[in-house]
Length: 149
Image (tube, rainbow, N blue to C red):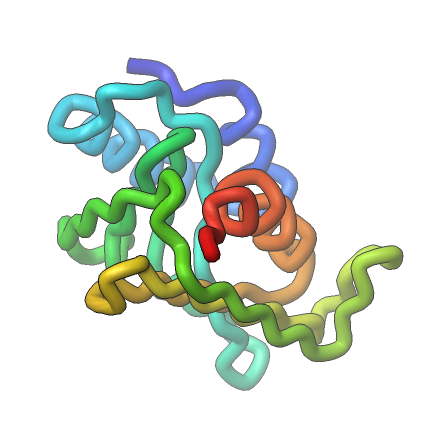
């Protein structure tokens, strides 16, 4: 199965190497085969900047109703599946050196947290640099619309 063009474009925009793109494609195929009953619409790679070295922490895929996480995706196949459709009771965002109306800088950071209605499932996202604007896009398209009162 071929990843959607917008996901490939995202990976290229945040500077992923061919090895990372290939790994993401492999996981995309496995997630699609195992879980996805709806088309995967978007992806987000969580990362941290550790003394100038970029480290990947997790890979997320999103459909209109589900979020799929692969923790430590470069070295592990550890998958979580989380329903998101009308299932977010709490959402929080913390920005550092990033403004919505400007391009992110190398030292920009965004952290987002979402909690499911039953309070048992948390989704945690942390991104740096160019990836900040894509995290905000994920929040706007998949998390915030599913916050319920």
